[in-house]
Image 1 (cartoon, one colour):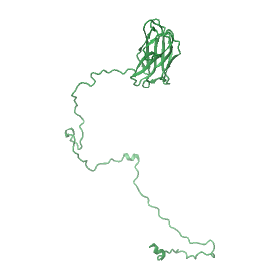
Image 2: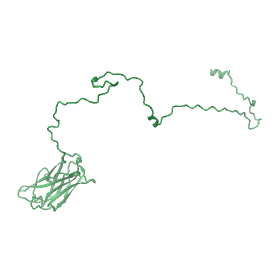
Image 3: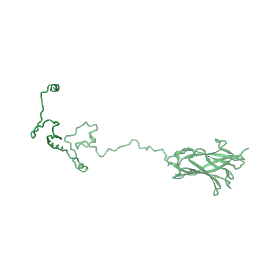
Image 4: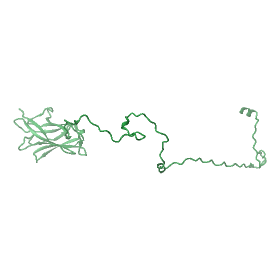
Length: 274
């Protein structure tokens, strides 16, 4: 259709201004600038605003009445015996008073058990010469020797935090067997666990050598769960001479953030050299 209109026009669209006469085509003989007819366009009417339901505020929402069911609830086959329901209501409601439960056995499941409070962590203490770390006997050599104090964690760490461990060893004691007359060595050194350091002190009150293990932490405590070993070496110890096998009674005092544990006894055996 469009092709026919272009090649053989049949329809024409003619626009005329009723108020002004037709203007001749512009030529060079006309005055400049030419005068053109003024055409006034009508302003379209504004679109009609669409009305919508107002949006409820938070306060208005709380005042909206709840929805109501217009029909009845479906009925299902009961899978529980009807006698445990209160059948006077339209909907099944469980009775508020349950039946009493009876046990066939009156024996308590805890009978035969002994309950004890959880104690402090367990450590294994042992003293051996550095020349034979597996030995439990220290030879009374005429020369100075190094001693290994083995402290190994065993169990019951729980949430304990260790503040210090003090090993008190008799030295030049008037009545008790002593490890040495006087200690002039270079002190004690941790073997592996650098969370701690050791101080060698002399107690004039107890006539004893005190080896104090302290944490390096600024909190002044270390969780026992992080401790597996606190072994250290005491250097250059000159043993006290005895003619027979002698046992030295040392005391171990563990201090935790929750308090002091019961003192433990650490036996150090000295063996004379033939």
